[in-house]
Length: 482
Ligand SMILES: [Zn+2]
Image (tube, rainbow, N blue to C red):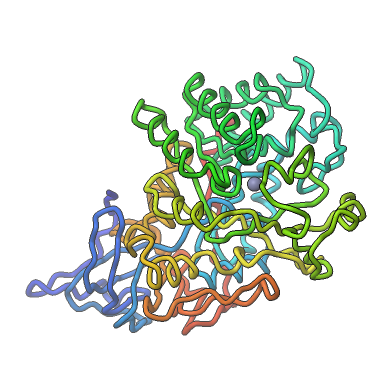
């Protein structure tokens, strides 16, 4: 719960009439849903200077009125796993109800430069982890890039003791500069030893920062199974005390997802701080020229060449075309996740939502999860299939992500809530209509059903349309310690 430091209300006969001149903006008569307090009732929301200053059944007025009768008013969604961090991606995210996009899995090696590049230029709030992948690439001497290619030093060369020390020093530096977590993609840095990963968890633990991890192996095939991979990071969390957040559990664990949910729940019952994450699709996406396709990936992922879609041409791959494209820098979409794995993850209270989305405007390649994750959960998993309740979905998409990060980044205590004192990041949507429109063929079709989306009190979606007249996004960042 949060407390307001703002006391602007004038009380007249028990009716809240707002500050002199009215609130900056008022959301009138919507069904306000707050996952922390459980409030689910028709309320008016008053907003002043980017913050929520009234949530009330009384009449209030403001200089701008948004009529929200029949709509749900929920906290704006906080995407824990958003690789797309540019204006084109932020527009798609806004149209999907997302008010904060966080790059926590890959992250950055230069936290100051990452925030500086977006400050004052962003439609929605933005934040990053300091990433073990880019830090390892820099320390091992690879050229910078989004993911290390399969033949990179980051993926193939074990670090010396001095290099491990340098990697962990840079992770600590990143946390001191306000990174909100530490990111890992162990499958992309296959040469990183268990000891190196443990040292990186130690660095995160000193700050109470969550380790957001794409695990080392996929699937059920031993000895390099995703169960061994989950044991590695659960052990690292137990040994070091660092909070653990398992990225896209379902796309790594595939058929073992229900077993891994049980392992995480048991670890939690023994006092470990563990969460996981999923997106509502049966296909993943990554670079074909990456560690995901090292070794016997067909056996691990329980797929064949034909299960890979190649967005550059629209074709499905064969053994021949796989070899032909393996060294290209393009994305591959892999249909590898059973529906039961998605449903099990979606229904579990341990699992939060992260889209893992990116739309690459230069390549014109992407996965529909970038534009459609949140509307898809609300439309298909909540409304049509009843896999989870509306309030539980909102918790997984807003409050849960905020709570995951507030130890390292206390500013998240004011996000993910519709409460007095919270940041006015809100999603106002029609629960009877909201739906994703993006597809594998057309990944940038915006979601429908969001009437207004507010970022720090400024509408970035108005009457169902994204408007980029103002750029109210602010850094979502931990405290900077020198
Ligand atoms: Zn990943």
